Image 1 (cartoon, rainbow, N blue to C red):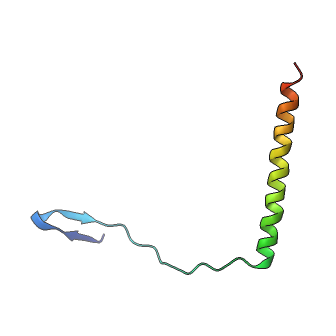
Image 2 (image 1 turned 60 degrees about the horizontal axis):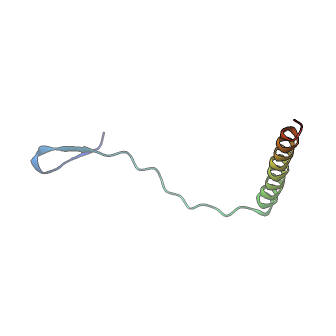
Image 3 (image 1 turned 90 degrees about the vertical axis):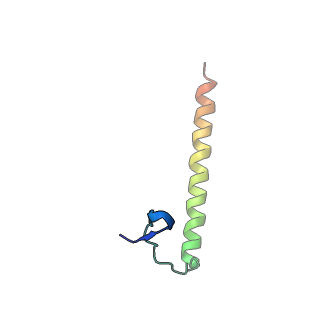
Length: 59
């Protein structure tokens, strides 16, 4: 385990640093998939809100 010694004999343990890499921009197919997933999420949430309001107005 990597450690350093400071003044007074104290030891400091440091976590290992992960490898750093450059992120790649999304491709056009990935962008299209993000749009479809966003639309599906909006439809799901709006459907759940509609069901919640319709059930709460029944009584």
